[in-house]
Amino acid sequence: MKVRLKTLMAGPEGVFHPGSVVHVTEDEAEAMVSAGYAERLDRPLETAGVEVAGVEPGSRATRPSARLRKTP
Image (cartoon, rainbow, N blue to C red; front, side, top):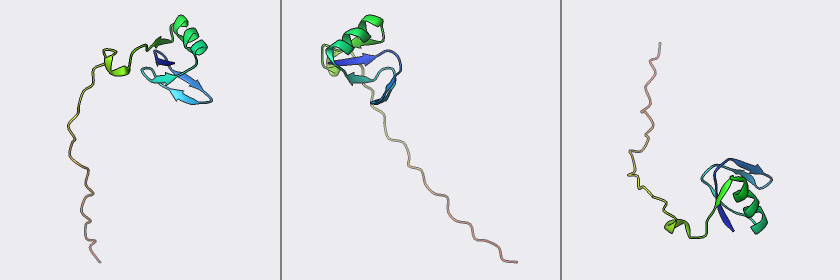
């Protein structure tokens, strides 16, 4: 079952930040939802009222040109 985390979750599987969508067993999902740590996702993420914003790509970083050293 998919749940969206409301708090930080860490364990042997890794660290998951608030807002992350994770797959857990039914029992784990029920415990997390009843404790207020997560919300159940009964619908796909796209239809759950989540807004997605597009970002225009910015300029690319460039390496500064090499300066010539003055010889003494």
